[in-house]
Length: 301
Image 1: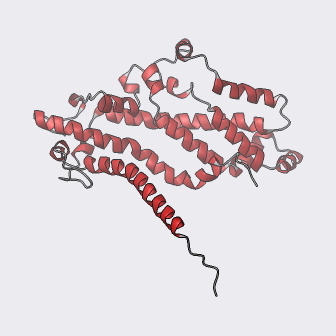
Image 2: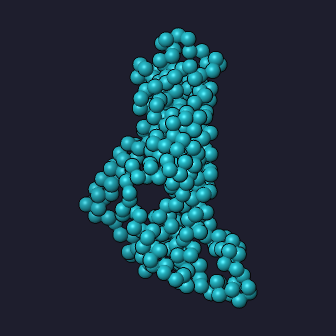
Image 3: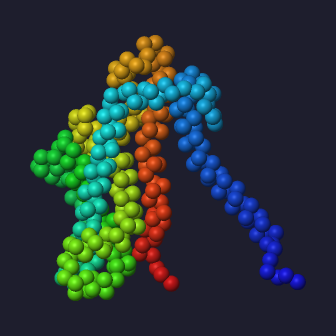
């Protein structure tokens, strides 16, 4: 008699069914809004206003995306967000590695004190007004530097990167490199960085998402529209319901009042899709490192 297969009890089967039902409901609650936004972005304005869009596009059209890419402020915000994300992430990753590697070295004198100073900033801060005054006195108000330098280092990312260096880079490698006359900078460049691609991919994703979604710093420090990131443009269009049709080029015909209103609604859905697309493109390239990276610091058996 084969005893390798043990049938679940009736209670276990009901429990499994209950889990699948609950998880399916959670999945639908997440998937449906996303699917609705994508479907609405490809639907006709009349179908959106009349509520005929439920699951699939109704009256397929690309007018919304045409309006997005012919809206001057949206295009400027999209370009600015890409720049802030690329430049800011490069600065963040470089600063994080430069801070984390020395803190991972046991021969750094006073490293516990320096680590305490880093962690202390996560529990206490000077507040928004002193922060604003500092940025102002440094002459960074209404400049791209206000979006790049104040948040150049994330303490949590320093902690997990330092932990990765401590647990994944053997001290024997450093000793062997020093015997061969390798300097610290050369050791980091030639050995540490190639062995640390998983954690670099993780912090790059964290920083990139943070920069792409950056809203508050831009809202506080920027005044010029030509410096606005895409999130500020989203705020004006989605929250304040402020769509300036004068920013559209003549390619899109918006002379009729009803058509202007319909295109305004369609533009919102298309803009949401366009705003989330870059991160959806980036994530598949780093997701294979993501699970390994976020588990750094967990207990090992």
